[in-house]
Image (cartoon, rainbow, N blue to C red; front, top):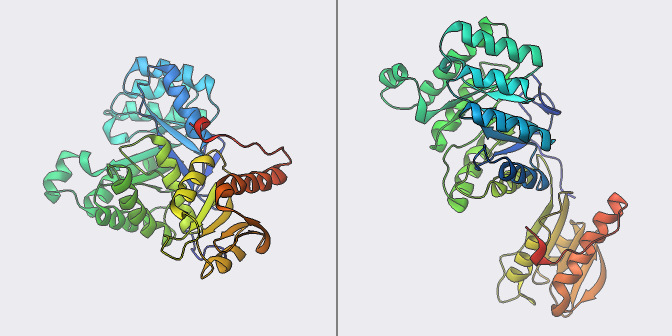
Length: 372
């Protein structure tokens, strides 16, 4: 088994988003955002449930209108995962979703308008025990800050955040978290570093508008990885122009790679070469597709030859080493031989049996065509 992560977390004030603790010594939460029309209750509920199935801790929902707020009430009744309402400008929407069971308000106090409106939102949040997320974005900085700095900069992002934070401080409301997002990795990283030293509240990490599935995952892994490795960050969202399900998968892959948090199968696989005794790439792809429903953590090594295979297999719960014959390992010890024709089926069976033993439930092999 791998050693614990050497990362020392930044100390932050813990808040509760529904039943999920954020900050302090709580696990880093992974969240995503729905991209359905919020007024389409059935579609939004379905997407939230799919996100929850792959391990999402928190889901954000955009609430652009009062009709969307009423739809949110219906959505809230049908799902049990913590929900954040994303609201801009209209304080009445914030008041309404608070009454309908929202778990966190993503709302910038400075965008609400008059102080009495801001106070109404904060008082409602306090009365219902709802935290607030201040979300600063490089693409929507205040006009005066755009004029002052000429262009988005880390300092501009931090100054914008501190303006909103000052409003909550004056209203004696400490239960909030902050995000400072830009599409530029270095701008984002430098902004979070600066703010991390100035406040005690939790930080929500993200590289905004990161891009497509591949390029966005790479950009997010670099930016979030830099911050997480320094102990900065209490929740994360990987923003991708892709199915939100992929945001959760990539988020957990980032956390797994830093040994911060494990969820699902961690496939350790070689890139393959002429030494391989079976088709590593097709085997790994088939396994990954079949095992998408598993959220329990487990290390599985799939190595195509005997050069590195035994060493990796000995460190995994289940390992496969290519050879003549191929050899399957259980808990680091050789167990039985496998032929090439049954590799994927046998590996899936072994993995699911191990998971079933942990949960004391019967193993179930789900055909690849049934995985959504």
